[in-house]
Image 1 (tube, helix red, strand yellow):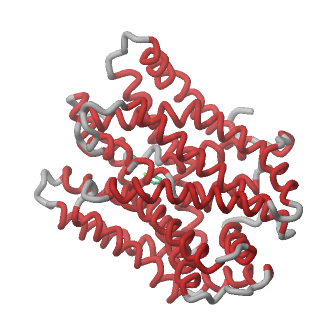
Image 2 (cartoon, rainbow, N blue to C red):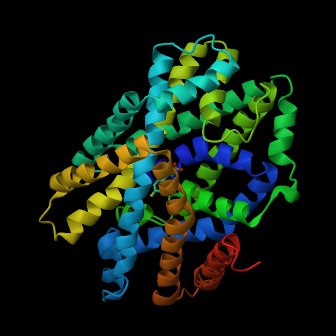
Amino acid sequence: MAAAGSAVGLGNIWKFPYIAGENGGAAFLVVYLICVLLLGLPLVMTEFLIGKHSGKSAYGAFKELKGTNRWQWLSWMCMLTAMLFIGFYFVVTGWCFNYLFEALTNVLHGAEMDSLSTHFTQVISNKPRMILFSLFPVLLTATVLWFGVNKGIEKLSKVLMPLLLVMMVLMAVRVLMLKDSAIGMQFFFQADFSKLNPQAVMKAMGQCFFSLSIGMGALITYGAYMPKNQSVSKTSMQVVILDTLVAILAGMIIFPAVFAFGMDPAEGPELVFVILPAIFEQMSFSYIFGVLFFSLLCIAAITSTISIMEVSVAFVNEATGGRLNRHKSVLLVSAAVIPLVLACVFSNSVFDVFDTLTSCVLMPLGALGMALFVGWNLPNYNHFAGKVFIFSVRWIVPIAILVIFLNSVGIIQ
Ligand code: PFF
């Protein structure tokens, strides 16, 4: 459940609908699902395996399993990816906290569609406000990490993940009763492949890594905390299914509402922040629903930031041979994260560069390295499913990542 908490986050509810909306809806969904099956599942298993077998986080795991320093670059890359990724992720988490605050104070009650859209622009351009709301989750995450990830996160996730799911189902049902919602369902489920291009396929792959927390060692770290009798394949499947379910549900809420309210599905990053408050306006008990949903969204974001920042905290702790203990590592990493977050608050281009560089370059590269590491260095299995898995991480995953990558930058057609 903690790993599911890492996977389910802003990637599912904020990013997936707007990327799908910009890239043709249903056609994107199909490519995304193929990526999840072909790359996502084996890579989640790969990271869990590395963590569980080594009992170490990204820094020590490769060395522990291989006995040499030859794979150490991969752990440095995980750390770099995690730091850049969290820089912009905290800013979006800040948007969520801002909307939670506004739901609590009921300021958006009665707002029209147009004003909701301008409101979003006003929110993100109010720098002092954004600094406050982005640094608050940094403080919250650091506090949880201070006490250690395995104290309470699992219990918290066990209650909150199902609650989030139930709420999303309720919202999807309500949205489907809106006029013209069928057009949105069609947009999301009836594929028109003419909208697909190599960049869209690249984005689907990046989104798959983003959403499943693959490629920066977060799942290695959680794998290290896994009890020895827990099945890697079963856990991976549960995480992948739950994560995909939440993304699809988010699409089933957002797209019918987009068409019912006469909006454009390719609106971009503001999509959910405009649509969600508009949906609550249509529901009875709108205040309670709004507060509850944005609370859950913030918690989903925080369970993800915890796992990302834990990569760096565990890294610093292991790399210094324990000389920087957990508390000192948390302080050091938090101090390093703050300027990165501020850079993303102040500059949209830094925000975009961090987002695209991590999703489309660093996470695929990290995943490629880990697949090759497990595929070519760990012993093969002697049962069928194990053999399929090793074949997939040896050949299918690396080739698919390379082809998608080279195709998107135009080197191969
Ligand atoms: N999977 C998270 C989401 O969908 O929001 C984001 C994430 C968490 C990415 C942890 C990477 C990671 F290591």
